[in-house]
Amino acid sequence: MTAYRDAFDQAMRSPQTFWRRAAEAITWSRPFERVLDDSRAPLYRWFPGGELNTCYNAIDLHVENGRASQAAVIYDSPVTATKRTLSYRELLRQVAQFAGALSALGVVKGDRVVIYMPMIPETLIAMYACARIGAIHSVVFGGFAANELAAGSGLDYYLTIAINVEQRIYFYLPPNIDQQLVTGNHGVVGWHRNTILRGNIFWWIKKQVAPKNWEINTC
View 1: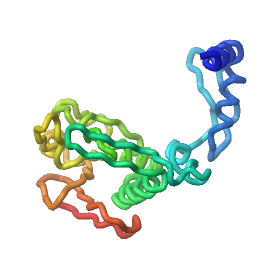
View 2: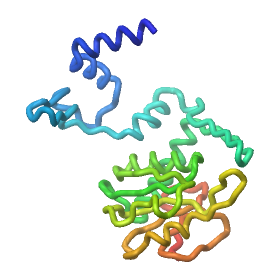
View 3: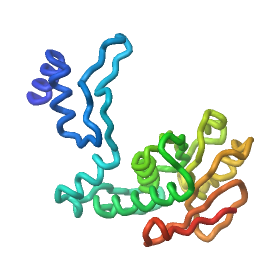
């Protein structure tokens, strides 16, 4: 508690010094020009000119610094009685592969992606994959109905899964997206198991292969 209070007091006394020190612990692909731009206050800009990749800082950096074998994700689902642990090395592999799959589908920096999935490791993988290639992601919990999906708000892709399980009830998510595909201009990427579903959907099948060899099926 003392360490917290000391950090809090320092942040209050000299916020720019405090946050500069915090920023030095992060890897930047392009250094920031200054800590705070208050020239248009109250419209403040922190770390203007700087650029970083959150996926790299959250995953790659730990692998490079000797934590590759440590647990990065511990998944314990009481709903499906499933337990999984992903090391930083394995998480990096899966994130990099999925980022490659998204890139192969044409997802690029600045694209808007809605992740419509339940609380499973693949949701986290999808989030990091978007961050890795610079796509903007918005998460919609897989238990929500179709009207929670924000179609027509400038998004470019949906990421989803065929089936969600809540309280031992099975929900099929793609039909909810079908209701939102009014114009047919949105791409949809999904996980599935031996099932081809209808709709304007690009399916990818997870395999233990390099990104360039991912199998992409168009339904």
